[in-house]
Length: 235
Image 1 (cartoon, rainbow, N blue to C red):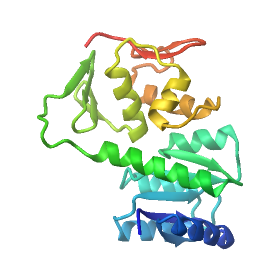
Image 2 (cartoon, rainbow, N blue to C red):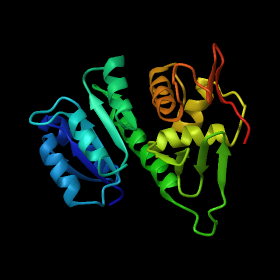
Image 3 (cartoon, rainbow, N blue to C red):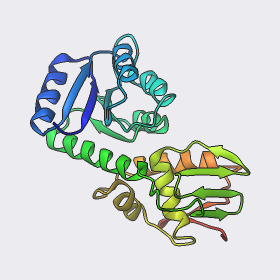
């Protein structure tokens, strides 16, 4: 079998359908039917490559489940929800989800998003051991360590998600270059951009909250209205 997934979904018919399809697509899938069971399985097994998490569940909902998982791990999390609203997306992604898919969804799209999520996580978890610790970018008070995937501001570690780090790295290695939302989505999410600004907006807001002294008056990530974003500063 291929990559190992943990599917936390209380609707057993949906769980069975998703599990059967993904196993035919060469994934190994373990299931849990509420948040508590999901956390228990996750904590007892550190070999999962990605978690598929429903929001509306008994005992412990998906948001609280994700919070507890995020306290222990940066494993990729794909949220599933029947509530396809900007609020749910913002809450879910803002708390550390890597992607979001609304019910009903196509199995082909679900599989594609899972594979993309695992590819991104794998790429950013591999540290090139042949490099020294000198691959560091300093911009004003920010210190971005490209080898160890860490960011510090005035010596304090900033806990960025993998997506937030990818965005900041892209900006930092292309200082003062403007990226459109379409370009950001293509480069970071490695997918076609269909005009859904919510995903990008949420990640940009969360990144600003972590790196800016005053997110409402950003000194690092500048918005060029109608065009896109850029990281402004001198190395």
